Image (tube, rainbow over the protein chains, first blue to last red):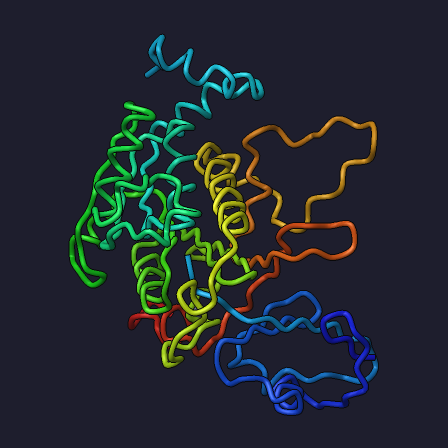
Length: 66
Length: 285
Ligand SMILES: [Zn+2]
C-alpha cells in the first residue's frame, strides 16, 4: 500500500519519478521523503516502488527564506 | 584558562548543568561562529549565542533595517529603520554582553574575505533568505570542511539542515538551475515560527559547540539512540553529541501528539557537482 502524506493512495507507480509525474509535482522546489529517507530528485528515476511492501511518502515544498 | 568572577556570576545558571558544565562553558568561549543573514533567523540565533557566552561571532548582512522586519527581528528598534543591520545588531549584542568578540564583515558572497572568515570559524550558520546564497555557503562549507547549520522559513513552513563534510550537501537536494525557492517576500512568514526555528538551531549549535572532541567522536549516531525507560536516569551526559543530526533535513510539523521538527537523513546524489564523486579533485576519489 502507498501512503502519501499519511493518506492511503490508490496510485500505482514503478518508480518515484513515475509517481512524481502521476502527481504532476512541480519540477522545482519539491522534496520527497520515501520511508523516512529524503531522496534527491536525481535519484527518483532509479528508486523503484515495489508492490510487496508498504511505502510511506511525504512530499513538501522546500523554502529558502529567513 | 578559567572564567573571570564576573563571568562566573553571569553564566552561573548554565554552570549548574552537569559535572562538566565549566568545561562546556569554556569550550563555548573558545568557539567562533559565522552567522550569515541577520533577519528573522539570524537575530535570535546571534542573540542566544552571544547571551550564552560564545567566544566570537562574525556577522554578515548587507541589508538595512526595514519597517516590515520589526515583527520578528527583535534586535532592531523602530528608529533603526534605514540603518545597516549588521552594525545595529553588533551594537545591540555588545550592550547585552560585552564579553564575546563581535566582527561585522562587509563582503560579497564570492569574496576572498568570506572564505578567510569561514576558515577561522568552527561552524557556519546559514540564516539567509535566498537560494543562491544558500548554495554558495553550502559550497564554502564543503570546501573549508566546516559544519553547516542552516534554517529556512517561509509562510507557515520551517526547515533546518545540518551538514558536514561526511554527509550529503545542500546541492544534492536543490538544483542550482532552479529559479527561486519560496521566501518571506513572496510568501510572508509567521513571526513566532521563525523565532522557534532559530532557537532550535541555536540549541543545536550550543550542543555542538560545547561538546568535547571525544564526546563528538563517541556520539551515538542520530536516530539510533534508544528511548530511556521511564524511571531510569538519563545515561547521556550533558554535552553528549548524540543529538546532533548531521546529514539530516528537519521539517517542522504537527502530527499526532508531536509538534516539532521531524528529521530525515538526506541521501547523497553521487552526481552532485558540489559533493559527489564527480566533484572530487584528481587523486582524491
Ligand atoms: Zn551534494
